[in-house]
Image (cartoon, rainbow, N blue to C red):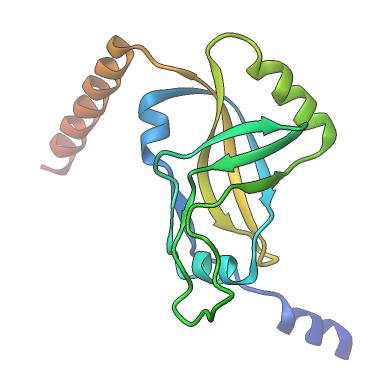
Length: 161
């Protein structure tokens, strides 16, 4: 009985860190989603827990059968010493071999790319990244998305009044 209560006390509450790539859904059509772990340094996870990261202009590429995220900005940790991390270094994403093979096969098709959609901390305290297999939208698709968003806003305004 004592063990269960001690175990529950050490369980972490769900984190409120949820960094989104808002531009991804506007510029790309998401075909499939995956959740990947990220290989980070200690100061990087501390900065992410303070929501000091950005997914703007990030993308994923395959190098030597491994998936890497490029151009992800994680600000330096305020209390970090000389061992602080580089702000825009490449970071390895952790997926199963089966998922990596499937993604690599699909990105070799024309017009498909892997884009980070969001960065979050899971219940166990690990940083996770939601990535999407995406296809670029055309200009007219973007205009349709804007029109649809505007019409939804107008409907919400009418419902309020």
